[in-house]
Length: 200
View 1 (spheres, helix red, strand yellow):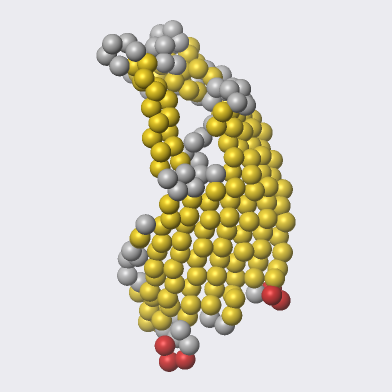
View 2 (cartoon, helix red, strand yellow; view 1 turned 180 degrees about the vertical axis):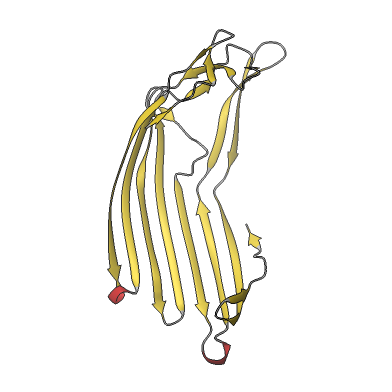
């Protein structure tokens, strides 16, 4: 991994370009068939590490130059993202297709010993299904999908008008979203589906 970030400048102003982000990514997995080939299953593990990502340097006021650079930033220490992913999908029975997946992702700032990305859900579950009606109703398909994820939050500190630092933390509890689908097939190349409604 090598990502230049010359437009992020280190203080003091007018600033000097930060070094590129560097890192490594590893992934390994397995794939297989179930139910005589009607279903496919995958399992993978991953580990991503990088150093030098620009983070805002709160000792200086933000400043932007005419050529797009901004000041001032600090190079972050080593951060990691590691976990695993499982997916299963295919035709459960005639006309009925199903897919499900689960992802576990743990991010860490190894330099500070804290969570790196608190807005990345640690747990994510996805489910979708589609069924083609039998017989004379075979031009119709019905289905739905869901996405369930764990808690996210944002925290930090701000300086008030008196120059005092005040901590903050905003939390979004875990939640689920659901979609419904209805489809009608006019011929082999044309279908009609109303816009899906999403429910929390």
